[in-house]
Length: 272
Image (tube, rainbow, N blue to C red; front, side, top):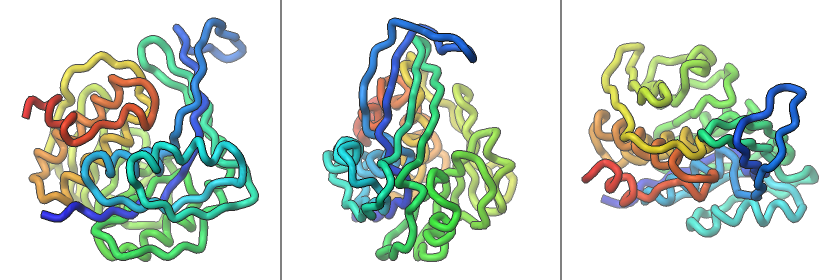
């Protein structure tokens, strides 16, 4: 079958990442960290993940007219994502990420140009994928223009007046959905995930055991793999199992986009 065509409307950030032994407590300074600059942003991460999993991907996003933009877009270009960019007079989005030795993270996002994303027209596609690091109006516009399946990863959590065909949320984000009468994938961390339809469980999966290194893009890998797998016509059980494996793979690698798996890597982790 032809590769799924996915349009992602979402954020682009440059992640400024400090790796340390323990996360600092409020008011505490932790020394001895290492530092890297890594392409990120939930929209960009999910676009790269979908492309690595075999989809044809277009990303609609906004970046600034600054040196951070080229760095933030490098992973997308390397993955072959088609870019539909708005250049705005705000700095490119930045995420300040701290990762400890156990792979736990704290993340602070300065949205910058992402907050100005507006006024776009979407091409025909099999699915439109959004997250919530962009303005409510942009999410609503993407939903209104979606000719195929509309998927929303409702993070960061807040209520937006859209009715997704597929929503991906964690325990804390579930209550932020304005409507949850379609398919809802509820992620449960190390416990795996549950797929609900009209509030009733229709599938459940647990991730393969991995050593956690950095959980920054695990949710993005999960979302992308679930969407691509469903568009490929896989069963809900198989799609959810693959999504859990993709999330586990990403958590076992350092960095956001560098950690995102290919379809072959998901298959290998599942022993397929």
